[in-house]
Image 1 (cartoon, rainbow, N blue to C red):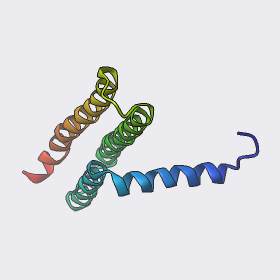
Image 2: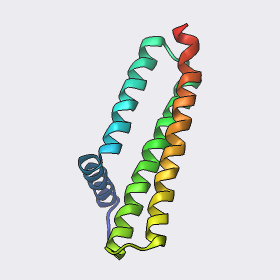
Image 3: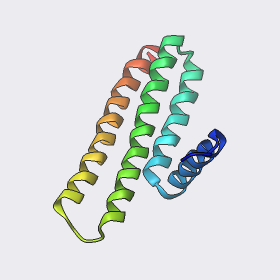
Length: 117
């Protein structure tokens, strides 16, 4: 894509983020959970390294949710009929988010528990 300015690429990415937030309830849930985690981190006074772990964890969940959404859209574009491979692609992408979210909960407990005792 010759002649495309870097600013345009950022605008397209931001447009994708806005569309995902508007259309995806799970992404809104993860963003709300992130706000709660960040607020709690500020209240309990996380260390620099704890903040780094929290940011990486939240970033991984949100990133995977965005990738899951992109995979779902691409599969839906290709076929509107049931196909076992389409179902598998969507289910596996969703499983990636589930694993990341589950690990995020465990990491959250490990990060916050010592501060809340």
